[in-house]
Length: 434
Image (cartoon, rainbow, N blue to C red; front, side, top):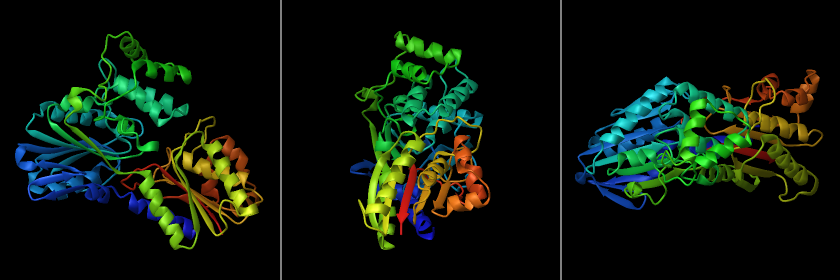
């Protein structure tokens, strides 16, 4: 187990948001260098930081270090429970994954800063995983409660992050490029820590500074797909959008987005690469399966288990000692009343599929330190986990049936608890075959 945990910790270090910003943003005298672009700070009357996300505090700290006294002020919505320190940027703890009043009030403050910006302003926008929920901005006459209910409905039915964010873009006022449009003609540098498969800019945080290609009709199809009946005001807005009574979100070619630079500073791929390096350092032949893993959690777990079986029985595609890594983010269709998260459910389903095979270790955990509505980042199991459960007269299949992976791993001492990590680049899965 120790090697698997060391590999996971290496991934977390690579996903550190402050270091990620410092790798992509630097200052040379009065010139700010973001990626390959240069900005003369003397050309601006004000430099401010805005944004939202689980890594918002650390990213804001990094910008403060670089900009120094050139930074006028800032306001960033962060996840409740974080205890960061910043000097010039005001941090606003808010609810996640279901948005709350604090996030709503903070979003209005962010909108007011963007709205007041002129061509003589530079806005540095920090966006990371969780920004969609942490920056709720329901369009009139929608209420925060209606947005909370809509988010809860879609989360419960297994909607993907792409689908959930498509809905958000069309019932809110800052997502889908709308924050950047509001800030025009100010210059905007968006520093983005990716938490979505494929690093799609228009999906990360619902793309507040990125042109949108989805439509109101797409949003309607998502509700239809999952047979979700939205709140009356939500349904009315989407219908009005389809009828052309409400303008679509700004397209990528929108003139209001010309002064925006979107820059990815960290991703799941970078974290997986670091995990692979640590695995090789520990003597494992290593394979990165994919950083694009999506779909139903149990299905993904069975596929990963099949690879472990292949290695154990035929030494393909690697000879032991072997480490197979994957990243991405799966979804759980909740059918039971238990407690758990996608990572815990992944490990439970995988270890059930591997009963009778040995030796192996399987770990799956979220880089944000939070797996579903639990205090665990994920779980870890070995070929001894099922025998341990059987000795306690615990039936793992019953726990899986009821989506109760948390209480299963609590009983067999398999929970991984890191606490909030201040970052989020999706999930890390490691399968070790000794």
